[in-house]
Length: 378
Image (tube, rainbow, N blue to C red; front, top):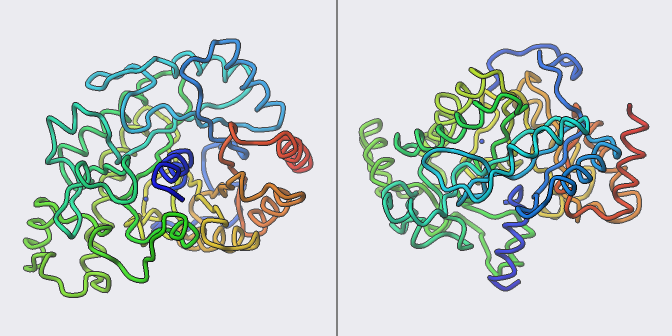
């Protein structure tokens, strides 16, 4: 796959490409005090959509049985809602909320968390960006694709910047929830099936994909351990250095993002990775209401049963303290009967429901399958 094609592929699946301390009942129906939707769908709305178009889309989603829509309202540059300190492309979110509710859907605003491709931020705050072990900052030398301009989750200025986004969303009275995506660092190793598509081989952790070695992370770790991370001879097997970077993301979520959402009684969820170690995303420690792991089996050269296996692993890491809504990737379940098997696998693994990426990409036959699947389970 050529670079231009890969950028389109990865950007189109951003949900492509973060220890529950209290164990509670293993009954998924009572795992969480909130009554959460069971059936979720990610959606990339057109910025040019009229209210009538949005209404028709939401009504169709509800007719298929979906209970919640996750529209992408921030994808690393301009926002699709009003927020101070950011450029707003169009205040689409404020229009969508009442239309979704009228159709009988909850609306959870899907936002990219760590990538930032806004030219103003790049110009004014180049020091905010993550740095690879090669010493190259993400805004000038992003890994893999141009939009992989990740901020560093340990910097206080970055935490405040991202927190302001969550705070602005939480202040929208009728918004049901906030959904975090890309709440992580860049992939140090891509999922197996993506590597040949990009003509790369990752048989180990290479410096150009290994983050973050910015001055904040280096000085902080050296103060903690007495070791400059750049002097670590085998960083891929240094558990302390790994944990330090896990903690950077966990700290941002638990100390800066989740509290401001919960203060306004907003549900807060995240799209998370099954291969969490490869993106420094120890998401089972995130203090969120629920998780939508991206169990895109095709990315990992796995079959349908893998979805249920990973769902079980996720619940075990959470000590069954939070619900899992297993995320399916529509291109991976195109064959006849594949959607039914994928959903069944998720439930066999203990899922409280399922999510699918994305409404824009569902075929007519997939829509009919979803309608039958949900009707049979309702």
